[in-house]
Length: 306
Length: 254
Image (cartoon, rainbow over all chains, first blue to last red; front, top):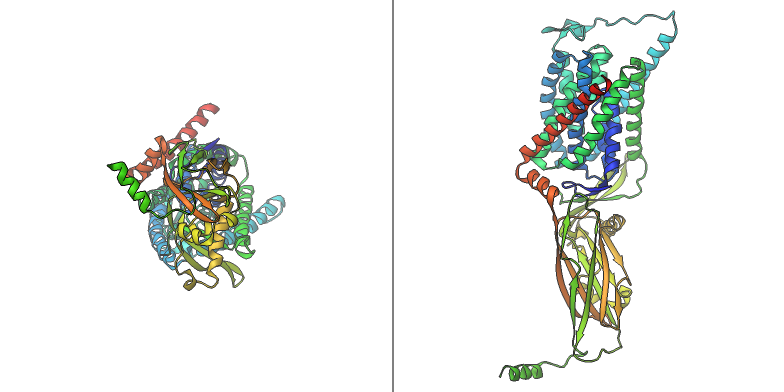
């Protein structure tokens, strides 16, 4: 069934959109990432103009994150206090990211910068996470191996403004979560994504939060970051396509529920190794696009040079 | 009195080289509504040649029909390998290019249209793209225009369909032009040219109004006129859908 999208001004198959939303929603519920780093390239691929894809992708992430977070709340796997601290940092980072994005657009190399940051961040995070999870899996198979302590004390624990994060079982300073939130918000604004794929490993490895709580808390703060992004795009550049969003959302919320069900059954190491493989895959694809000679060297974009 | 005046006027006019030929034409529809299930549209363009003397046979009569979407400026970028990766380097600005352009003819353009007439009426696809002094913007600037045509032909936005206009008895002509599903809103210009020996003997212009209707119109207007309300509505839908799916699944499991 073909459907004409009023803002994107293209006609696409409705079932393709439902399917895309479903797949991304499923991964979102499974791993606690918003799925922005998947939905945006997939929308480019089916011919949606990039600006519309970025803005509408953010809108879809809001829905799948709401759906996913509700499933996590029931399992008491959301640390609201930690989420709010991360969000406070995130909004500051996001605002400065938007400013840098505008500056890069004026310079004319924003596409390249976005692609490079995808390769760099996704590649680094994916590889680190993969190596760590693989080690953890091997260790758990060997019965006599050394037992990993739940958290180790480091310089992070010497910082002031300590707060109890009961759900996470942490008593740490608010400064590291604020900084993590700000860095993620900044990168998220520049890369046009929610930032879950950066947030999740940062929470696990930098803040030492338990994996079960990480997913719900990450989804919780992604809702607000992407809602903010959606509104900004709708108001400043009119690039949110509601028709496109509704179809993606419909597929996405169902997929997110299924993903959340499955995530309860998989072990933490398995979840992490799967997410790392996915992240490495996306980074590899973008790296290949940059390295291989494209079929068409020219590209046409509407409008004149700024 | 009036009749005498017309007779006098017609005597003053120089004798035409060919018997006077004029186009009478119609379109199957002069408006296209883009609704949610819009999947392209087919326009029948038909007409006849009106003349006051028997048609001459040599040089033969030909018909060229163009359909042109609203024009806008474009930027064409070129990728080059720098430090191992392919990045956009040079860019050329196209002042104005139609969003859609289709040319249908009764014969091969090279035989039925002279270069001078093409220049005057801007009929072929390369002529429909207006790019002034692009040669100062990049080396081999014509490559950029060629690339734009190639890309848009692949997207079915630009189309040259030679020998797809039927012409009967050098009088009646008709053709179907398929408007693709990826249509831009606006006023589409339909031009019909009669040529003999490469020269345009008559031409005529019609308009097709392409407009979004119903839900498409409502959403488009809302996004432009009330962007904040539109954004909030999008978010509400997202939150409601997320909550709805979560509740539905809980009920399913219970």
